[in-house]
Image (cartoon, rainbow, N blue to C red; front, top):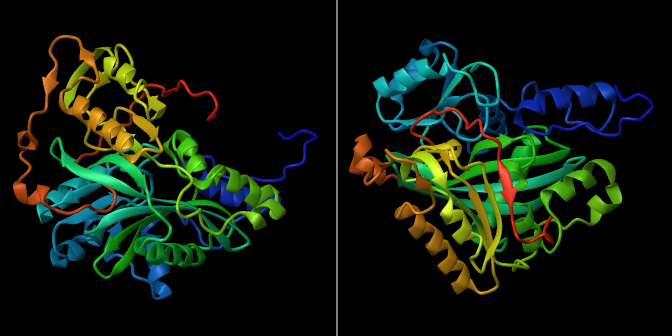
Length: 401
């Protein structure tokens, strides 16, 4: 297939390609993480590997049959998290509040298709980790790990779901959280045998320290909408650049900073757009307003005229992502609030007739106790299919691409 070209690198472009990339790169004799650890994407296996080296790991049980997890569910304190042992994002993840709900969701998952393709191979039941969820993006070469960025998820209860993504905020590298989490993530990479290429680690900061949610053995996703912000924050490089260097340019990788600069070289945030309404889109006036904000940089969305929009309850029902940057913190905060107010007022879209509005989470019978839970690992209360529409990208700034 390569004809007369020499293959110099092989890496995964997304979650579903990780296992194949490990096998193929090993077979081709190019830089690889190898297959000594089979299917390192397996979330259950990841927890077992870090526990074996004495790291904080999540209590869990998993299997293809409900009998494999029944004893765990009868003894573990609720709520508990159920999710596919593979897949990505919030695909199939649910916070279950009692035994019957957990059993029902187990059966649903074992009869479902994952967003990344294929049937759910097995189900993982885990303790519920209370605390904020952080993300650390690394690139590695020969076991040397370099931090490209660190973020914290902004998650809130809305539309009957307990943990909806509202944004992703950069974390300063001199913070206590960074000083605790980054060494933990690097030890995790070592335990999983991730010596080369990009990684996207998700960690909950619990009362007794960092605990792994999952290690994604590939670059951060989101269609790369974060690159312009990350490049500005670091002063000119991203995980994408570092990945290329880790495979192809050892000299450049060597001079890549161990961690991003502190303070950052810019100020900005990612706002994940949330829908409080349901209907068929007639027009998108809110997008026009967003693109005129002083801090606007980039809008990613797949919503257009004729698209059916639902209440946002997870990543797959989000209605877009906006990158904002501005040197004035007050302007940045005002622009974020402008977007949030448009969401609350349902002014992002103009709908065709028969629009439904979500006025209160109680519509979905979510109790006050459920809403009071602190930020959790992953998300979500429901499993839904990913939108089939193609994403589009727009920005008036041509210099950032």
